[in-house]
Image (cartoon, rainbow, N blue to C red; front, side):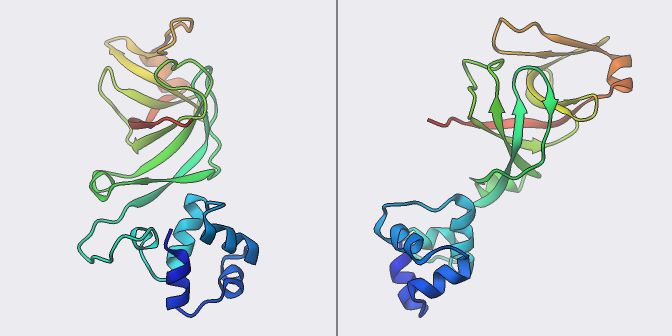
Length: 198
């Protein structure tokens, strides 16, 4: 990260920058030596304070025509096992390309549970395009009973839908057309990317 040089160029001491970011001076010092890394959210704040792009902060030359990554929020965990309440707390941020961002509105969700193993494991993050429908076979985030979110593969049938886990120990969840209306059950997004966390 090109923090020290950019800080000097803009006339900030470590202490002054720390105050702007509401962190300690020693935290800024650790970022500059590379012994600690700021979060994605903090990286964006540092770039904003120094009036540079995230790319420039990481030493890439300034290029007005260069594409800049778009940060999207990682929301509270969604159960990949039994449905659970979708908590809209922002846990972190993930970066997506401007090309992807131009195709809709996105958010990210952290996976919990083991129903989508081996493809998705607990702690992984999925990038989700907000949409209220999806094709049969797509992996979706669905709300059951209005406030319980789950990640499953969608299978459409004339009489209703199936929400299918990757993990064969989980039975598919079937909802009739009537249950879809009355519970309700609705798709809130389609999973377009998986980011595995180690």
